[in-house]
Length: 280
Length: 216
Image 1 (spheres, rainbow over the protein chains, first blue to last red):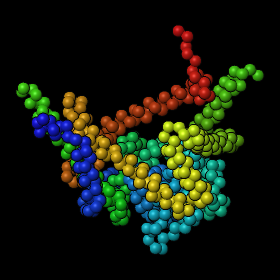
Image 2 (tube, rainbow over the protein chains, first blue to last red):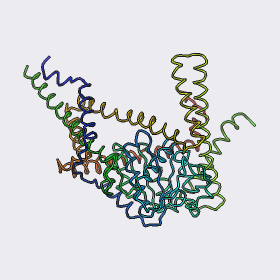
Image 3 (cartoon, each protein chain N blue to C red):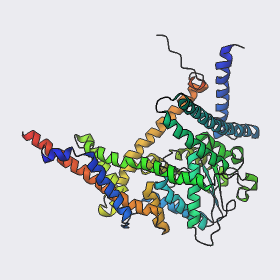
């Protein structure tokens, strides 16, 4: 078998090994390379940054075990960002697993919170936990929170939560942040909150889902979007809080470049092999 | 009352009335009584969904319980499910703030989920090396677009190859955006059509009744 043929039929284990090295090396040896901030991420960050102190915002925590490594660091930084600005947050999730992961994000954000920032449970933030029913559940929640939730995620009755004293429907929020991960649920927020109540919204999804939401961004229904681990890394970068996402984004540099190199190499070899076959 | 009336006509009429009330409220201001009715109906959805979740868990547990009892094929996996279910659910019901419950999530669910998801990077790279080739003009366009968008998306891409940003943004916003917009509009029209069929009783699957075959 010629070298050309061997390279064209490269053992997939070699490709796996190369990809493993490309991804693991920058994580084990962190090097922060220059990074360009994407327009969608900048718009999303500026949207969060423009929320005035004292406002109450809604965050849908839709990150699960598979997507938390991508979006989790960004969500944690956003919680620090908003609470640090004096913005109050109401969390909820449309998945049982994601509700638990939202707890992780809140706990990590509170641990990273600069001293002196007010971040009291029930006063500055509240996690309402799982809201069942998918999009219909979101509609019910948006129209009357008390009709679907009688207590928060930790069992505290809503009547005893000061933050919710004057909050009962979507129009009571200044903005919505939909951390949809790979749920594909961002349109739920657009259809059930943005359109009927006129509350502005931004979101986060996995990188591959960003094109799905481009029409909503172009139409102004979505104020930018944070895409995947890069979106989280950009949030960390803009907040000057380098963390896990920035390290992982560097890994995607090497992984992405390896992918591009292999695809180009595969095509060059393919054309050479085809030319040789033609000559013969 | 006839069986057909109870099993088919009343559910269809109820579906149509409730569906129309929901739709009308979305477009027009309605009296408080109608709004309150809608709030109640929407809360029914969350209750039914939560109940379905419990029902699903019970059915799954019974299935695995029976499998262990009869020592069916690969019954030992069912023991793993039962132990995992009892431990996690027990701790979760006791206290969601319990550190052991969170430990299970943070140290077991997270690595497994993340590992499974990250495997796609390896599979996609291997598949792209073998399949993503410019065999014809269509494949060449796909290949070039994929490379441009990938380089745009990786953080260092814009620094190494600055032109990929405007070209990649154009690809994402114009051709890709137009495609997705068409898909969204098409899906929405399909949902409207399905709604009309359900309200008019032509679609009966949601009642567990298969559509009758047209006689040829």
